[in-house]
Amino acid sequence: MVAAPNRIPWPPILFVSAALAAVGLGMVLPGPAWLHASAWMVLGWLTLLSGLAIDLAAMVAMWRRRANILPHRAATALVTTGPFVWSRNPIYLGNTIAMTGATLAFANPWFLPAALMAALAVTQLAIRREEAHLAALFGAEWGAYSQRTARWFGRR
Image (cartoon, helix red, strand yellow):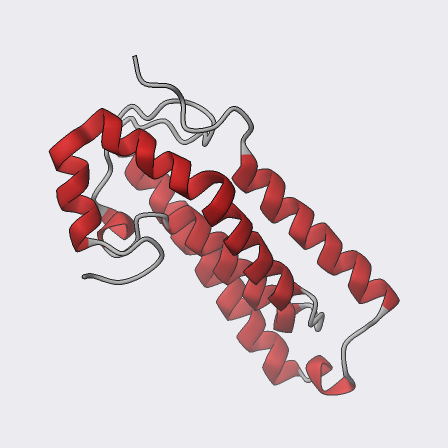
């Protein structure tokens, strides 16, 4: 039996912690006045909602394949449809895009470095281990998928 990818569900913990840190830092060291312009806020909300739409589309694709969505539980299916066509990690990508959009939506510049730090931490603490888990479970099918689809975004 192949071990679960992680014992701790790192991705949600990391993204929520990063967002809370950004909110806290924004209270202590707010962003510049130009961030409060309504055009920037509209762009921020569109970006944030785009990230959430990617999350939702990925969850629907996983639900259709009856794939486990919890990052600390064993995979039950290899999903390669929907947003998984252009990202091996569309939920993490969506979270990162949503946090990036929060930079402008909430006029809080701390969301941008928080999003990048969360993405780097998720790569190190979860994605690498998840990929080894998927390779062990799905072998050649995983190998082919990982060769044609980038970890974060794009076709190879």
